[in-house]
Structure formats: structure tokens, C-alpha cells
Length: 469
Ligand SMILES: Nc1ncnc2c1ncn2[C@@H]1O[C@H](COP(=O)(O)OP(=O)(O)OP(=O)(O)O)[C@@H](O)[C@H]1O
Ligand SMILES: [Mg+2]
Image (tube, rainbow, N blue to C red; front, side, top):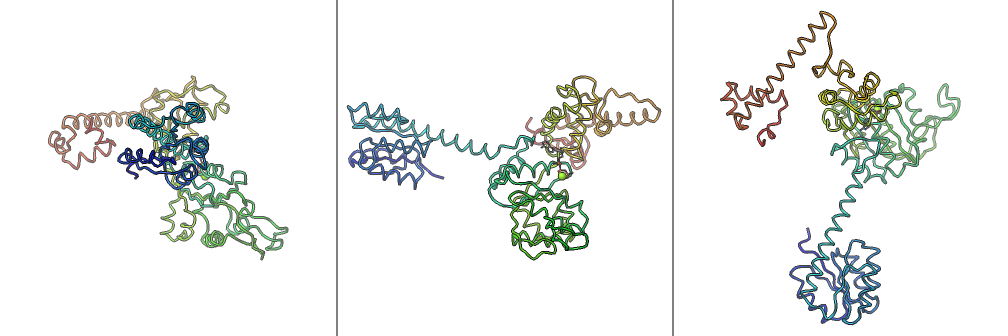
């Protein structure tokens, strides 16, 4: 951290800059340049917050210096000093983008005020630039809907390494959007003009895998009637997406590792080395650490792949994304459903937020599409949601059972819900009465601390919030 902001004074007149330096040095780090050229050198080496420059200087005039600064250090405020009586210099400097001007011989109080304002202006401009850079790195591709900070910062990281060949490993449960992210990474990268080649490692029979990935020469094996390029070769200049990498057989993992390490490979039955010029993005819905522990995945390959590591959290851990995703899918599938749906009724949204979504975003997308087709009004209603979803969250809806068995089931379900609600209300009131103190709550209720803790956990109550409120 810099302690003081830096003021650079460019002036060839020693007496002038000495006065300024003495007056400003306890507030700013004061640097001095004796002419424009020296000022340029200083700017290249040091971070300067405000530049105070004389107009008439040898080598490079203040006006020329100003022009240079405006081009290269757009955020740097320049205050120009002009001799008393040469107002036209001041006017020209202001036109050329000076922040302000002062007249020589300088009056210290006036100069102080001008420099102070210029410093504040400088801070604002620099903060804006920093913020813009940050926003740029947080900008998320349009088809990825998420306000989850974790995912957004990961995508920012991906953008930072866009120009490199760093491999990316994406882990996440089924339906969390791994493929969507892999494609976005390709598009964000400097290879976006090249091909995106997908290999589903779980779907290729073992004996075909090698030739699929590396290609084969003519006659390499029975049935290899002609030469065939492999996916790795086809992905040159682009990205190869190794989906379900956790399913890759161990012997092929060794071969892939060799390719990644040596950046070259041969077609099956071939002897010529081909350069591997593809960026690797791998995805899996398994936990590769567990696979390594179980001896099914190679540790060395794992570390080769996860230079950049993106773990996509399951939807249940980022429920804040649900309303946005629902809206997104409504507009995405408007045509398929052949209906104008404006939104989601609040009951229905409540159910969507409560559901645990084991199938993640894909499941949510399917549910939204189904409901769009089944709903009768212009909105998705609770009753248009698939019954498994409603049942899973124990939602009370307008559903009316039609058989004895259904009635029995519904009665149990609704009773459970009523009891849960009662228990929850009891807990909330108890904690409030006890001022958020668990021991006190235990004393008041007759439960012991541990039982209470369990109840709080069961209802997912956030004690920190309850204490504050
Ligand atoms: N954040 C998101 N924004 C918009 N659509 C999403 C998002 N995440 C996932 N989807 C959509 O959900 C569906 C499933 O995503 P995707 O195929 O990428 O998941 P996956 O993790 O590869 O699943 P699997 O492990 O089953 O292969 C796709 O239609 C995708 O467009
Ligand atoms: Mg997938």
C-alpha cells in the first residue's frame, strides 16, 4: 500500500519547484522532473496521481507533455502552470484537456486547493477504471444464467486465462451445466474461431477409443480401410472437450497424459508425430478425488487436467438462480410450448424453490417446459407442475384425490406438512422468547440443548439471523 499519493512536478526553474516541494512534501510524495522528457521517464517508472507542469520547458513543452499524457495515462489529471500574462497558454492547455491551471508566480493556498481537487478527481478516475476491469472479468456469457458469485468469479478466471492453453477441469453433478460452461470457455478463449470437438468418454467402446481420439493409419487394424483423423487432430487450433472423463479407461488415461505432457501423438498404426494443438477442457460428474482413491483415475492426469478448476455447484446450493433460470427457460421455450406465458404464480415459484432438484438445471428446464405445456392460463401455476415435484415438497395445492388410496396418501402428506409447520412456528417463537440464546430456549421449553440443536437443523433455521432480528 502506498501511504501518500504521488505528485509529479515538471519545471525547469529550480526556485519554483523547490517552493512547491517544500510545501507539499508532507502531504504527497513529491517527484520532480526538470523538463518534459524527464517527466515522461518518471511516468514510465512511477505511479503518479497528479501531474503539475510548467508550460515553458526545454526539450518538451508542457503542452506537448499534456498531449502525451492524455493519450497514454487517460486517468491522470494534469495541472498546468503558466506565466502571469500569458492567458492564451492557459486557454490552450484547458482545451487540450488539462484538469486546471494556475498562474505563476504560484500562490501556495490556491495551488493547494487545485492540487487537492485534482487528487480527488484522480482517485475517482482510478477507481472507475479498476471497477470496469473487474466488471469486465465478471462478465458472463449471455446464455449462462447465474448470479452465483462463485460461478461468476470462476468465469472471470476463465477469461483471464483465455489466451493460454491451460487445461480446464469442470466437476459437477449431472445437469449442472458442465457442457454449457465448456462451450462458453471455448467462446471466451482466443481459440473461439477454431473448432470445438466433443468426445464423450463414457460412450465409446474401449477398443475404438484410441482410434477415435488419435485417429488411425490405413490398415492399422482389421477394418481400417482408410486413414482417419482423430478428434484430437480435428480439434487443432480449437478446443477438445473430454466429457465424462471419469469414465476413461486407465490404459487410455496413460496415453492421454503422454499427449498432454509431450504435446504430440501418433495415429494408431502410424509413426509420424503430430503436434497436439488443442486446448483440453474435461468434465465429469464423478468426484475425481474419490476415483483416484479407488484406483480408477490417475493422479498425475488429474493434476495435468485441473490447471484451472471449475466446480459447478448443484442447483440446491444456489437457489438464488432458480427464478432467473425459470424466466430464461420460459422465453427459451415459448415457441415449443406454443403459448404466451408471462411468468410464474407465486405458489408455483415457492414449490420450485423448495424442491431439491437432484437433476439440477436440466430437471428444472424440463419441469418448466412441461408446465408451460400443461398450464391453462398465461402463467405457470402450482397445479401445472408435475405431481412428483409438488409431492416432493409436500405442497398443498388444489389437488383433489379420486380414489381411497390417493385420499389416504394425501391425508398423511398434508398432516405431515401441518405438523412440520407447527413445529417450525414453535421453534421460531421459542427462540425469540429466549432472545436467541439456546440454553435459555432449552430451559423454557423442556428440551435439552442437543435436541433443540437437532430441531433447528431439521428446519434449517439460520441462528445468526434469528439472533440479530
Ligand atoms: N446456468 C445456466 N443457464 C442456462 N441454462 C443452463 C444453465 N445451466 C444449465 N443449463 C441448461 O441445462 C441443460 C443441461 O446442461 P448441460 O448439458 O450443460 O449439463 P451437464 O452438466 O453437462 O449434464 P450431464 O452431466 O448430465 O452431461 C442444458 O439445456 C443447458 O443449456
Ligand atoms: Mg454433459
